[in-house]
Length: 266
Figure 1 (cartoon, rainbow, N blue to C red):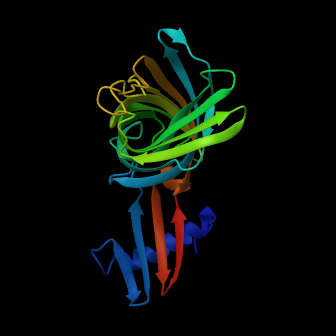
Figure 2 (spheres, rainbow, N blue to C red):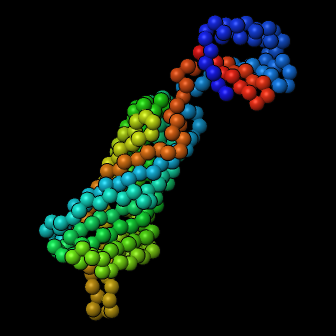
Figure 3 (cartoon, rainbow, N blue to C red):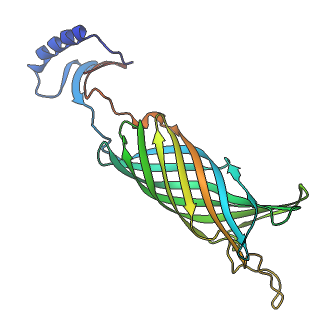
């Protein structure tokens, strides 16, 4: 258990440790195997790679055109299942880089006609690479930006006529969309772990060369369809929420006795 002591008590403890310091050249003074006093400094940044995890919700918009004409679509929100694991490396208190693995549910909702509505989405596995600038050590506020490559591994489509679901299907590693989907992103994160990110996919969501049917009677459903996606992502680091924190007081003294521990910061 950790406590904060008044300066007067700290002076008393320091005077005690001077007696032990005469008998040892090590940074840790030991009375016996069960009791020790040690001094040290907290790092001004994290020296090692550290891992964070988060869940997020995505509000997506699509710029859709059919034969060059604007196609009506509806903003889409997805929460299940968007999960990310991020590997962070800080080079200073104000600059760092990151990469990781993301599982995302991305897609769009369109209305080709007044009676027909389509919901089309893919699950992707992505690898982002980015940098962060700001208070990356304290975590009070910093900006981040980068690029990501996603691999689409499951496609799902639902068709509604006059509000009633009439058909749905899903395909693993479908040819209806590109297998690899590049994107760019930028955003900010603030204490204790909230983040907002905007992500843009410049590539067409659909594969124009996809076809079905017999030879000589093939149908190309996406031949003249263009769809570019933009996401606004709201995320929260639920694991290791305090991973930003590095002690403001840089020095410490620790006293241990068995399983009990007392720490004084100064």
